[in-house]
Image (cartoon, rainbow, N blue to C red; front, side):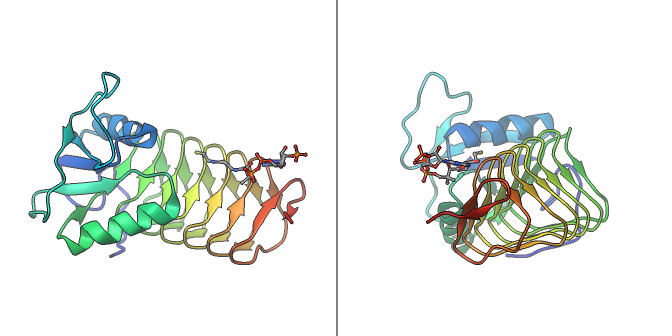
Length: 215
Ligand SMILES: CC(C)(COP(=O)(O)OP(=O)(O)OC[C@H]1O[C@@H](n2cnc3c(N)ncnc32)[C@H](O)[C@@H]1OP(=O)(O)O)[C@@H](O)C(=O)NCCC(=O)NCCS
C-alpha cells in the first residue's frame, strides 16, 4: 500500500464515488462522514451481512475483481481483520480511498496513507503520519510528529501527545492518554481511560492510571 503527503478532505485518490467494505456500525459512521465530505456512497460490500431496514445504503455484491473506477475503504473495527480484508481487496485490484470527516482537522503537513478514516472533531496535527488503514476516531487527538503505523486505531477521545509512535494493528482505547514521545508496540491494546507513561512492548495489554500490564 502506498503513502503520500496528502491531507485533504477526500485524500487518497480523486474518487467522488466510493464503496465501503463492512456494513456494520463503523461502516455506517464512515458512510455518513463520506457523504458529508462530498463523496457519493454507492453502498456496502459485506459478504456476512444481510440487508436490514436500518441500513441506509444498499448492500452490493462483492466483485471478484475490481475495476479502476471502484474506490473502496474498509470500515471494519477489528484491526487485524481490517488489514486482512484490505490486502485481499488490493490483490483483486481495488483502489483505496480515504474518508476524512469535514469537521476533522488534518494538518496540511500531515502525511496520510491510503484507506484512512478520520472522524468528526479528530485532530492530526503538524507533521503527524497516519499510515495505511489507520482509524483516528471521533474527537481523538494525534499531536504533532506522531507516527501511527498501518491499521492501528486511535479510539474516540484518546489523546496522544507529540512524537508518540503507535505500532501496527494496535488499539489505543477510548479516552486513553499517552505521554510525549512514548512508543507503543505492534498488536498492543491500551485499555479505555488508561494513562500511558512508559513505552509499551509489542502484544501487551495495559490498563489503568498509570497504565500497567494486565496479567
Ligand atoms: C482493557 C480491555 C481490552 C479488557 O477487556 P476484557 O479482558 O474483556 O476485560 P473485562 O471486561 O472482562 O474486565 C476484566 C476486569 O478488568 C477491568 N477493566 C476492564 N477494562 C478496564 C480498563 N480499561 N481500565 C481498568 N480496568 C478495566 C474490569 O473492571 C474487570 O475488573 P474485575 O475483574 O475487578 O471485575 C477492555 O476493557 C478495554 O478497555 N478495551 C478498549 C475498548 C475500546 O476503547 N474500543 C474502541 C471502541 S471505538
